[in-house]
Amino acid sequence: MSNQVQAQAAGRDQAFKCVTFCLDDETYGINVLQVREVLRVSEIAPVPGAPANVRGVINLRGNVVTVVDARRSFRMAARPVDEAARIVVVEVDEHVVGLFVDAVAEVLELTRSMVESAPNVGNEENSKYIDGVVNHPGGILILVDVRKMLSDDEWKQLVAT
Image (cartoon, rainbow, N blue to C red; front, side, top):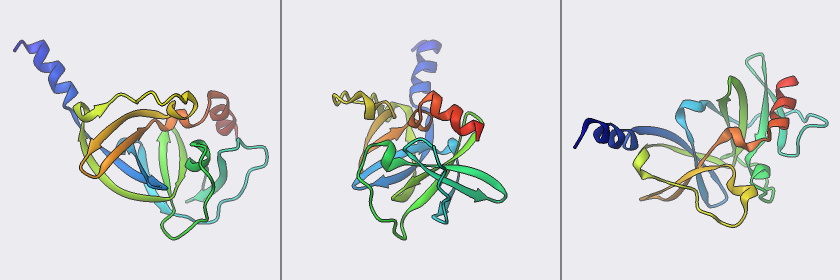
């Protein structure tokens, strides 16, 4: 095998970790390098005029952090907040944002070769958030691109606040 082919194969098998979270019975993953911390749900202050999938803002050690509701982003029905609900604090393009989810499951170690391209499900609106899927022993894991959960205009609006 040539060095170039070996390098390409090694790139495909590069290991990475992702934090998994649940919405209903589906499991999603975010690259662990984007995750700063996971918080229990505390008081979230609503923001008038914010995009529909923005739940509000929280005070995180003196910093205001916008919280995006993953259920709203994925056009899922609302459900009551329970003890398992969490806010996954992520850093996206040097901006810190909270992602409101039903529960956080675990950290998984994966390889790039395990990731398959996002399937065409006929609904581009929802699939635009998907980076890929992984079929692992626990079931299907949907890898999410957090950056795409808000439009460019919505990101600009959040950064301006």
